[in-house]
Image (cartoon, rainbow, N blue to C red; front, side, top):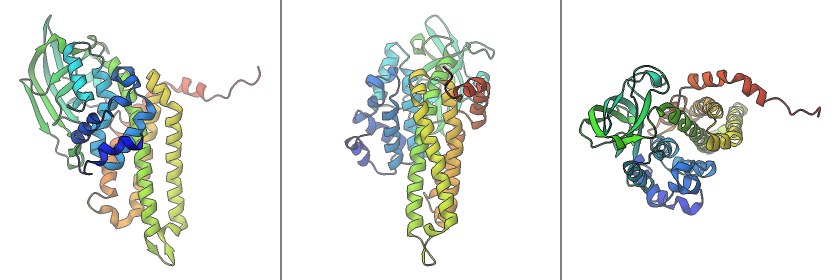
Length: 368
């Protein structure tokens, strides 16, 4: 992200909420720049996405960055699949930062089991009705629209689910904030839909394509998560190195202790591994929506963040427990092992693709 592009963010206080950050990004035209040709429907530019996420992470809370990340990587590209005037207007407002979007996929059932979700949409020739509840959704309390994944037919078949664009002010929509101080800046909350009646033009994309669309765009969210993980770890390691080098111990500082240096170096190795993996797989995810590549990034990002923040948290000692300190950040960063698919889920995806992954690791055939 160019230095001049960060100026709109510098004008905000570090305590800015996710919606405030989003508005600033939109006013500066930085949201559209993340996408190829400036259009959310054309896919993300990996370099620009990484630059913007890094700039936001450097200035604001993890929760505020989460608010922007979900919208940039998943919500806006998914909304761009809509072709009705309702969808186009909502997309234009989100791209300009005048409105926030909430991706309402996680249901009252286990979030990793989307085919068991209970939120329903009943479709008529010219209308629809949504009933159900979505929990732990970023941007809930600030959203102008919800992108709701709902079932239009009973059963677990992947063609039984459809996306619906639901205005937050529609009759029957009830929002309540989540009981979590850790993610307040993301606008996290729960939303209930009580027989919400809308026109048929609020269906996003084709009926029955809900899960294929989700799989396509969650891949980009997993790429964004890995890029953000690199930026977060780099920031934490930089701050920790500065802290260790300035903390007196014996005739030197904590940084001069071999045990400290070795633990720090192990963190550097983990982050460089993740950084290299992102570089190797970003194009496959951004341009081809490769689900195996995306699962690889997600499976690597969560443990890397956990390792780095746990190690740095111990290296900070008692100072890490200060308000807003690294121990608070470490608790928030546990999200990297849960959001966008729990570690166990993405590892299962990799296991399913074991043969193709192993084939890709084979050396080139030099016998020819």
